[in-house]
Amino acid sequence: GSHPFKVVTPVRIRSGVPNEPARPSGMLASRTWVCDAAITNANGTLMTSGSSLSDGNLWLHFTRSQDWIASNDAVPVLSSGDGCWVVDTDGRRYFDGLSALYCAQLGYGRRDLVAAAEKQLHALPFATNWGWAHEPAIELAAAIAERFPGDLDHVFFVNSGSEAVESAMKLALQYHRIRGEDRWKFLSRSYAYHGTTLGALGLTGIPALRKPFEPLKPGHFHVPNTNQYRCASSGACPPCDLACARSIEQTIIAEGPDQIAAIFVEPVQNAGGCLTPPPGYLDEVRQLCDKYGILMVSDEVICGFGRLGTWTGAERYDYLPDMLTFAKGVTSAYQPLGGVAFRRHIGDVLASQTDTMFSHGSTWGGHPVATAVGIANIAAFEAEGVLEAVASNEAWLGEQMSQVAQRHEVVGDVRGAGYFWALELSQPAAERAPFEPDISSRLLDEVIKPGLRSRGLICRADARDQLVVQIAPPLVATRDELTLAVGIIDDVIADVERAL
Image 1 (cartoon, one colour):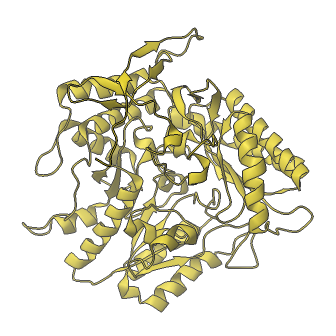
Image 2: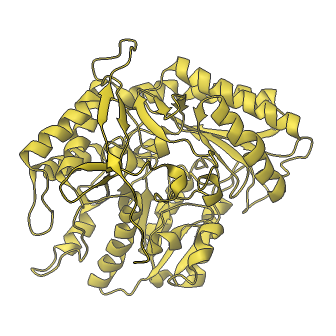
Image 3: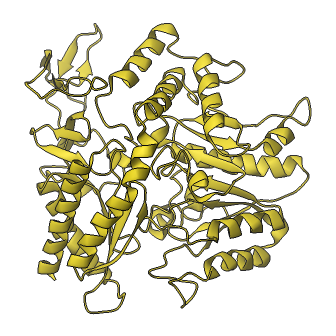
């Protein structure tokens, strides 16, 4: 008919182990897999169509189509990883200064995490947590409860960060409904990213991400964030006078205290570039929630599981939220897994009657293979002193980033914690003046991104709010590796100054 057949040919799959240096016992030997096919016929024989990224069969996430469709090679195709390094199909190595996407905490090539997955695949490859339960999910939930602060004793597993945030929103709504309160509004912070599902997108305070899908469900309100370099709440920063926290109370009063279900905050806000909380800020948010009966949700999809040198940002900054969302680092990205931990008073309400339950669930939430890997991940963290290493290197890494700022007038601010740091760029010789959007875009596309890639560094460069360069390496990165990464950033910032 009108749909011509494609001509395909049989394919061979082969693997090889190249010559490589010795590595720690926990690392897998690096393997190069060559697959000349992408489809299978009815008899199960693997066939090839000579596929490539430029064909457009695979559609990428948050990536401009012009960067990868047709002949443009702006998007590398990765083939393998080892330690803190990844390799593309052209054989070029990159230091992964973004932990893939803030999630490859233990790096690549871990024998222990792979072995945990393989063992579980043999024992029980799948079971739900829907009317049934399985051992890995029970064990991981207990391990998380032991390591999270206070009485965050209950864990509901999902598959991703967006789902974790969506689950926390639904849990907040149902908690208040069972208690006889019709609370339906949510507060979050400007330029904060909380996910892409429609509920989580409502929390997300980045206008460009929300606009294509508006109108969204009503009831989402955004309050100032904690960017002390460009404070939107007070002319006194720094030091912070907590006007940002007081503005939250103004919004609560304006919208009706009895209608606010929850406030979502990240311990260190990612979007905008590692916006750390000023002293007293998170305590103030906690007090406001207690004053008005609002649930406080700590969104730790990025900050949780070691990014800040502790299991959670709540522990790092000494506050106790009612719920804590997590994903990414819980398995060091060896399996997709997320979840929401919640306190006993919420669990007590859900179990207050014989027929009450959390009216939410998914097929894959708390997959046995993913939760088995999560258990092995926690064991590796503790056996190898990962949290302690991040904490001990924090001040040193911050000093390396500060030295970059001292060498370049275009760097306006340095901020971060743990293995999570950002440089914010501003116009030289103009006090805190941001770049015009067209200049920021040009610097990103023509200088910063190609400069990082050509030098072999993966990190985040973004200008959705202000122009920032951000680093969030695997938590097992050594000082030598971090020195290399910071040196590349230093060189790229120099390129920026020459381009102005």
